[in-house]
Image (tube, rainbow, N blue to C red):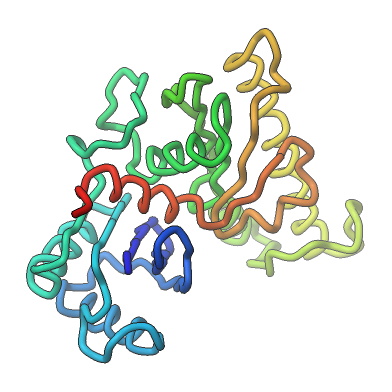
Length: 266
């Protein structure tokens, strides 16, 4: 089985693939202070509960694919693969790794590995042109051309960041639950904040995507497929009118594809 690990600024998502099927997944907090040994214990605790894997660390794992936006965690995971999975092929998505997606950026090395991996999966599943909207610590919008090229993107503050900023900077405001209010017009402070977050971000998604689509496919913007992913995407799905597809495991699928393109099968 293939273990995929997507390290984000706030959460780390892990997926276990049996062929092309994701059979298990986990979400844990990202902590850049964790050492390689601590990460190995965490992996053993999670995977030790799965019936298809053995009790020993690494039993049943045939390959590992990792992408990370946190350099400190990537460094420790590299050590984990060396010390605890030494006989298992591992692919860490970084410059030099084959993805099959040309990057049309001024400095391709600046693009987050997760965004490239998302583009890989989007092209494979839906073809181009397409736009991936990833609701994470930041809300990112990534454009993929009709030829499958990574054309660029947009980075905006994420939903949780905005909620925290309101609670910290607003003297009479506080942190709230990310939930759907009774209506757009809030009847109390909490509902008013929930409404602002939900419908404000839905409007942001619609506005940014429409502008990107006109630039990406000026002859027919409607041919652009819009894919939503990320842990907070379900919150906005019902309100953003431009989203065509929802794939919660887009990054993990992309990691599987990148692994297959870099590790020869025997």
